[in-house]
Image 1 (cartoon, rainbow, N blue to C red):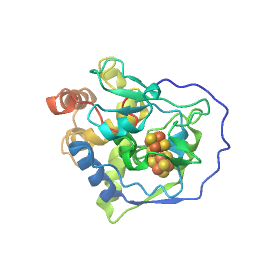
Image 2 (image 1 turned 180 degrees about the vertical axis):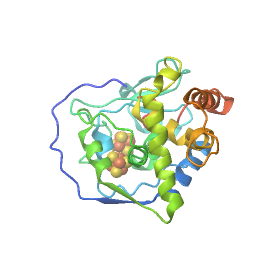
Image 3 (image 1 turned 90 degrees about the horizontal axis):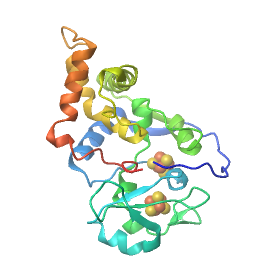
Length: 238
Ligand code: SF4
Ligand code: SF4
């Protein structure tokens, strides 16, 4: 993701915002990552922070109605992806050019990338965004509060946090470039491998594997054919 510093909008400290029940969120997110295309049902309220947070939006070739609605000069080919995969950038204020008067002018046909974006994934995994570049999203992340229906729901949240910490702290066990640097992709990876991580080395997994063995299992999962398409989500090609 290319980013530039522009004149910042004032960042308002937010009161806590209900993020929903954790296990429910996790199950929905895992299914959405497997199936793709369902979009995320985020209780955004009046927040439009991700529409003016200096992001590049990936639009895929099959999104014909979306592509028709966006002026061609705003789109450019995604480097390294097949022809037809395009990115839409942002204006000098860091906002999406389709955002007018704080409203999405192509809402009915907005990109799938926008439909998939769910900033609760950062609250769920503890993966930070760059608060200097995306201060409003960082504030929104701090405001989310999950509910927990039972102990298993609490444990699932702890599992995601533990997995993210392991991937960060033991990045030396992974080949250079195999772990994503982009926060959205990193958080998506955490959601994708946390059950594997728990089974291999988490609490209650019986005999604990060494960190190197855990990393090997995570890598095997990353290299499985089903994972080769790469993580989906609004930030996937930024
Ligand atoms: S930053 Fe989060 S809450 Fe705000 S619009 Fe984007 S996804 Fe919704
Ligand atoms: S296309 Fe619409 S939803 Fe997507 S970033 Fe732009 S204004 Fe926001």
